[in-house]
Image (cartoon, rainbow, N blue to C red; front, side, top):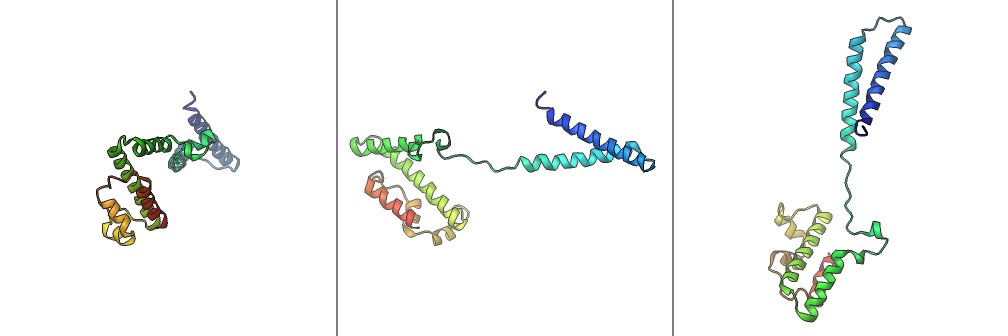
Length: 168
């Protein structure tokens, strides 16, 4: 019943508009063709409802990057950040999971570079590789196109890449 409530309202609205037109025509002494007037009101109402339904359904959806809006905590408590920090610490202290960590870091940093390329220049790397190479600093272009450095997990290596991204 709840899902059909808007249509009950819309049907009542269309019937009310139709009755208003018939009554207004009778007051003015016009001989209105009731079925044609009803068809006109229904056709206009359907057009308006179609436009309203499709205009409101195309709202931009915002997906939050962190759970900040729920927890009122700072962004550093996002599970992805804490997971990455734990993996970095394990790789630096005990050498655990270095290969997969390097692949993940390279993928994440490449995504950040691609997003910055699109935000600053409106370019998508796969669609315009020559333009992208022309506007991108050579170090970042080499970083995206090359095999990741096996020592990328080390703070000084990762810091160098992050500084290049920030300065761009």
